Image (cartoon, rainbow, N blue to C red; front, side, top):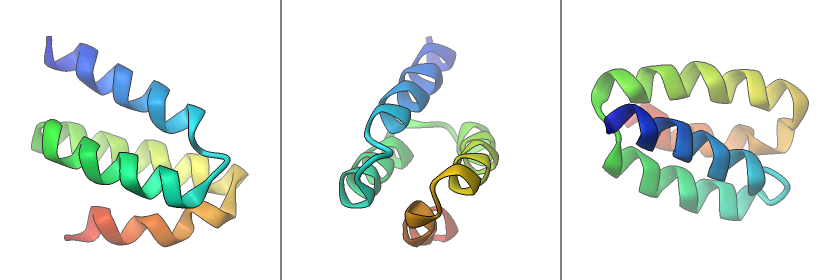
Length: 65
């Protein structure tokens, strides 16, 4: 079940990646739902996404806390 939540989170974040404000809000919600090891995986996935959309870089602050 938890893996499904991780995949769902990636889908949502990918869909809202056009707007950095919305992306940050969804990322903040995702961090509350995901397990610690999933957050580590998400950090890697987001770093790859930022290469395509550098505007999302400001959202990394949520992953550092």
